[in-house]
Figure 1 (cartoon, one colour):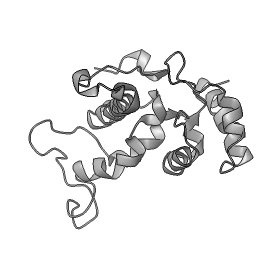
Figure 2 (cartoon, one colour):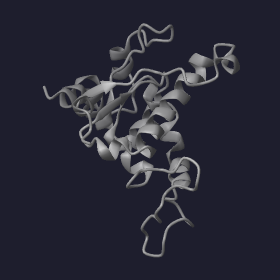
Figure 3 (cartoon, helix red, strand yellow):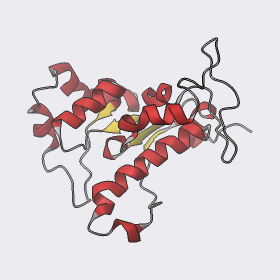
Length: 184
């Protein structure tokens, strides 16, 4: 069966509210829950084989991809991509799975980072710089998180005011990457 046609289109994947909201009182749903959800989305699409099957799928993860960039090495380790789980020839040992919930991916999860786009909603210059260093400035796009209560009030001026970004990176984030993604 071939992948559905709509999976060849770019698109933002909305949060699914997969987390136990009772444990996320004190506004933790906004503070950390959305970030965890974005990370689960990345891992599910990669480890579930969707990104291998739907090679033209271009997902955009809000909330800067959540904890994905920070936790990617742990995902690699879980999938058997880091020592001592590598065979002597350096290839990943099949099967990737370890029993329950077998994985269905062809490469380490970190090698899928550049298949996704991420919005810039980190609210912090150092966090945005970290994201760019991990995924590349060509994968980060302007975002606001509007109409959520924690939206970036003036994202264009915020990006333009970040000293750690080059002019080229700012241009990519503000419009270049969206133009590329949408084929404009």
